[in-house]
Length: 111
Length: 117
Figure 1 (tube, chains in turn green, red):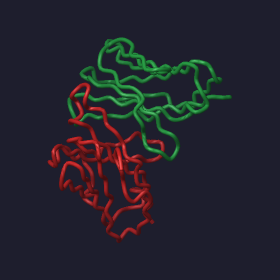
Figure 2 (cartoon, helix red, strand yellow):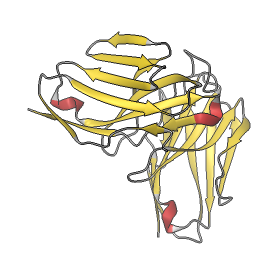
Figure 3 (cartoon, one colour):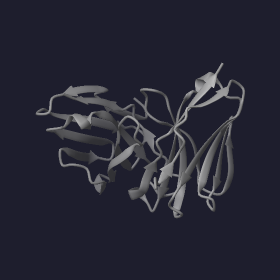
């Protein structure tokens, strides 16, 4: 079983729609969760971090964490073509030894 | 320069060469990391340094040798690499070691695209 699992996509959404990206993790002791965006040929850049159950909003982005169900999601409202990228979920558990990334979900926003 | 910088951005080397990758962070962070990103694979954590002390070596072959002379600089020395080592090598830093909520966000450098012939 993969420790951090994401659907590789591509996930295609029309411009202006809501994009929903999901991530599940296996370690119940995980305490820190991150979403990174990575454009092709570039390095990951932080979109959101979330540490407690519930929703966290930042502009068009909302991260949702449910530790009981062991999933974290990212919603992108009013999707723009510039949001087209691969979105990486990262989970930290047990300290530095367990910084685990998912393989990423490729998002395509169609104009 | 701001953030995390890496040099060189691209590197082509033969299997018998010795080269080094350099990372510098200008964020005043205390922890630095090396990651390897291969096509269709998740980022793989290679090494972790906290206050210049190596705290993690994730079963990385000895042909990769890290060095952290101070909290702002991190090197990855390469020798006798294999073609399968071709990948994007990313450096990251965080204020404190990952695991401390709120301050463990990792910021990535632009990466070095390594090709081993």
